[in-house]
Image (cartoon, rainbow, N blue to C red):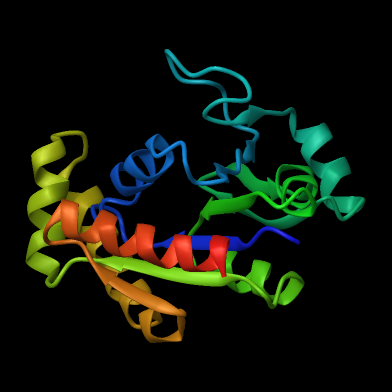
Amino acid sequence: MKGPLIVLSGPSGSGKSTVIDQLLADRSLPLRLSVSATTRSPRPGEKEGVQYHFWSRERFQDAVERGEFLEWAEVFGNRYGTPRAEVEPYRDQGTGVLLEIDVKGWEQVRRHCPDLVSIFLRTSSLETYEQRLRARRTESDEAIQRRLQGARDELARAGEYSYQVINDNLDRAVAEVRSIVQKQLFN
């Protein structure tokens, strides 16, 4: 039986990485997180094949031309994409594959994989996003405003997803996402 393809999207500050980390810590789930390819350089502490596959622009372009991506985009001068090799072999073995991608990536993937299940992770208010972004202390006010505008744009599309999960309480959000994933894996 083919494993499910599960897309998790949501604005910056919605808690996607935290929810995914807790979900993947449950070793009873036959589930893996797809590792994206990128043309950007590794940041300190990042390892090849763990956070990303770090590819040259030439290798990335060759893969685009050969149709090796389920989705890809250029963001701030660097390319990011989901290689089919990170998804299809695992699904064929019955393992569920989780993609953490934005709304534009989800649009591309659903054209290739209409059987995907999509989850939009959100908070109950823009104020919560802003508080979380400011608490990180990693971005300028201008960058935070840009991310908040991005959140507004993404929230306008949330209703198109299979599920919406509100992450105002982490334990509750993780339990809800786990329930959705289990339903896809075991039904």
